[in-house]
Image (cartoon, rainbow, N blue to C red; front, side):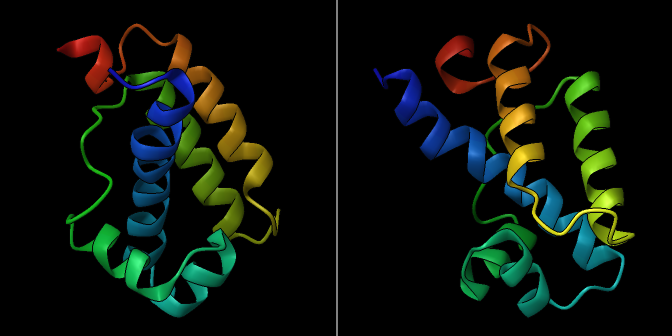
Length: 106
């Protein structure tokens, strides 16, 4: 069984990043720019967009809305560092009954 910190690193953060990366690329942002914005490698963005990585969590409605708001803010350049928003979403996910995390759903 994974510790809560391992769950965040292996499951939660990749799922959040995948959702943001996919949404930004769909809007027309280059994968290289997404990688720089999120502080991850271009191959990681490619794997997120192609759904090879980061898709083992089903988000609840509130989490989806928060990810969408963060993505909107990044796209509209209202913020340039997503770290605070990602941390807030991560906190919400750990408390959200509607979000299916592998450790809770097994």
